[in-house]
Amino acid sequence: MDWLIFGVLSLWLLISVGGAVLVKNPIHSILFFLSAVLATAGLFLALGAELLAGLQIIIYAVAIVVFYVLVITTIPWEKVKRFEGVYKKELIFGVPLLLLVFAMIAYGIYRGKLHDPAIMKADSVRDLGKTLFTSYLFPFEVASVILLVAMIGAILLGRKEE
Amino acid sequence: MTLEKAYILLGILVFLMGLLGVIVRKNLITILVSTEIMLNGVNLVLVAVDRYLGNVEGQIFALFVLTVAAAEVAVGLGLVVSIFRLRGYEGSSEVVHLRD
Amino acid sequence: MSEFTLSLIITLVKIAVVLGVAMGLGAYLTWFERKLAGHIQARLGPTVVGPFGLLQPLADGIKLLTKEPIIPRGADVPVYYLAIVLALAPAILLFSVIPFGPGFTLLGREIKPIIADVNIALLVVFAMGSLAVYGTIFSGWASNSKYAFIGSLRKAAVIIAYEVVLGFAVLGVVLLAGTLSTTGIVQAQIDKGVWFVFYQPVAFILFLFCMLAESGRVPFDIQEAEAELVTGYNVEYGGMKFGIFPLAEWYLNVMALSAIAVVLFFGGWSGPPILGPLSPYFWFLAKMFGLVFFVIWLHWTLPRFQAKDVTEVAWKIMLPLALVNIIFTAVVVYMRGG
Picture 1 (cartoon, each protein chain N blue to C red):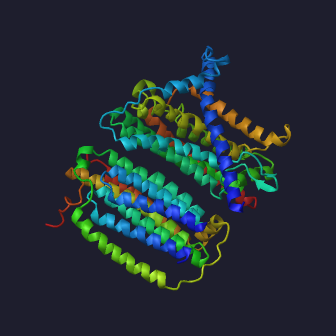
Picture 2: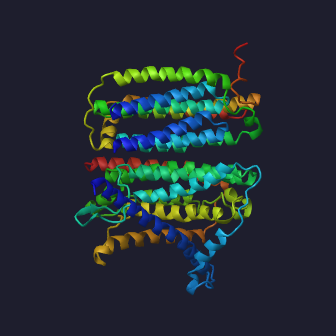
Picture 3: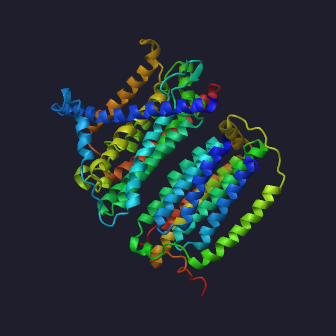
């Protein structure tokens, strides 16, 4: 049963990622990316990471992809159409090389001996909250400063020169 | 081939496909989308490794990756909009001014 | 029959029931709204088709289904049709985390009248409520028309501003209940014996505003502004393709969000047992429709905000209020021992 859920979700994810990487029209690529984000959220739920699945949808699917769509729809379409699609030469060289890299890593993982799976606890939201705010409090505050700096930077970059 | 190894292999595959997207695509915005796909693949591996550890540190790390991805998207798209305003185009083969 | 197929069948039955009832009620809410609008404006609503105009939604449905499908030239056809799906799916998915009543046992199995009892039900509500912005943006963009696109950009800005306020307003309730799951919040209200609306009145008013903004109802429906933008982002959709947008946005979204408001603030299905074993469902539906009635009443009595004021109010007035509310609630919960 776990394999069935994993199979369906991973097929959805791989088709979406393949579409996002290879499709000509940029808006279609962003739509495939949205579908990939939802598939990843499903995979997180199947792994038992509930809070992360919810946050994945809220941050990625609702904030980041909306940002992409707004930026690309406010640029005039004729300018976008001059640069759409993929470079064919790089595609022909890149695909076998990356397949080779994946084959090497997959062989290593398949034959390797990893630790035995541990037992997952039930209420991961409570555990995550406790660990995040006790052991990882400082990185949490640093992350909020990063977001503040990125916000200031984005506002400054996006301002029109007067 | 246990289920946990299958999740890790899936994450690595998604990461490599995103890398292919960064190399191959023409439009600057789709290059950024492929970068986000790579970050998604990394998150998947991080959460899958949780099963071996038995605690939630993988999810916390993935949460920080998510936060940094959001910040990076804001700055990256601000840069793309600035390039477009200054030069009027947004193809990756046209932004070559630092080279000369 | 194995355990898995049995639970799968039960879930499919729950989905069929909720989907059927929600869509049927959505269609009949149009009749209710027109009757209410009529009486507020000192006239009768629809009375011709059937007794009291009760068959009016059927007539409207048949009319919309038989119109000619016209697609503007230069429109992006896959995205044009996908926008309709993206508008309808999140509104229906919101119904999957709403608890309609307490668990009961049937033939020896414990059945809970909620489709997906996850630990993060409230996060799913935020996510689905905000995924509705895609229907708006893509329908405006794929129509290849400037009026439609301006309307959709306005609505995207409104939804993004109000989803932040929504998240902060609900945090007070989560602090009091100690869990993110909807059944847990209802149970916490029953255990404490008091509805959370008395503990968190400010949060309830903020939630009401966010519900109005996310569903695009007056006073926040600047993207429709019938007199200015010719109904904005769905101007190029005809027939039933047009009919789905108000159904998903004005009716399904309002019903689902007022059900969530009932779960968060009004104690869900708790109430005196006047109808025996069916009384939880009666109380839940009564409270939900009370809120829906209030929202429809507001629609026909208030004027609409200006486009520049809507987001200003969200960021400058509501967000600081929500933050002050959370700090106050957190301090009180800590001092009373959690």
